Length: 420
Image 1 (tube, one colour):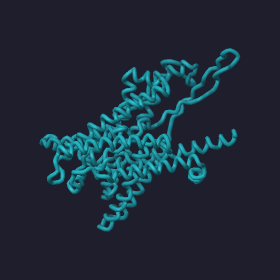
Image 2 (spheres, helix red, strand yellow):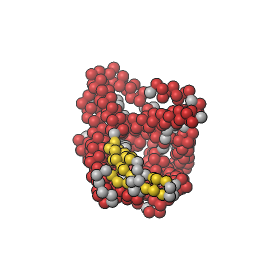
Image 3 (cartoon, one colour):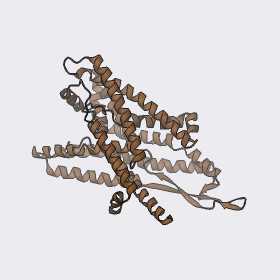
């Protein structure tokens, strides 16, 4: 780690990428404090204290949504568009063929993702404007607010998408992931300040220690599982083409324990918070009862949350990992899994392995998502409610990826020096 940090500042190219990243982060944070006109700030803060889905999304914007700034939607529309396009590539054959065309096909899919981001931003901005129509400043016209907020929020989402893509191109790491990471990290000082206030108000210091220890254990577990993988050894037969011999080497297929990453938790959280959101739009008695039953932290919420994480983990793995296609590609290039016949037996073997790995990954995600709630209820320290399993998974995953990319730059730099 010390060599990685020193290399970050000693290598000119890497240092340039680092300062580009810092500049984009400053721009992102600055935009998160420019408010959209017309909203009563006191009523907005009260709305976010009711536990709806907006409070969950505010975690990924670093408080920009709670301030209703021009960056209130953050990178969420772009993330949603990317996930939707990833799913459509599996479902629509034309997009699947386009992805196989190489760089040109991927550029077209990236362009479609940007168009979808604009559409999602526009729809989400209109929905947010109608949602907040009841907390406008006295005397402020709703039609004026609707036009100004939709234009401001949509333009802000497009600008955040552009910042994220520039961070990926000119900076270090994945820009979209880093923006979410920065949004989460920016809230941590407020969590510590709330904890100090609770302790001064009579909360148990021992409970705070237990909570911090639980977070430390979860971080260690996340690192172990995120880096964990099952390596399937593949042997390629030797082939003679003309006067040259190809193949004969041995490689492996890395199957990760957590194939879905944080996506199953996000999907499960969104589904469970949806009734509370609908109840605010339509205050019907039945919906109010469902929303109260599924309030975060309740037993029904935790049981359903646990089950939905399992469902979405298997669902996402099923649509992103195709063992039949992988087995056919191995067979096409003259490869075989050691001890397994090529073709369908290989596909069945890969299916068996990925099913067992997905079970372990789903159990891990469910425990990581539920454990913070259990510990908070046991210790009565609620100042870290926003920093749950989802946030920890994102933070640790992005940090690992960032360190990995820096180390890759350092290794490539060493090879360049040897070749020179």
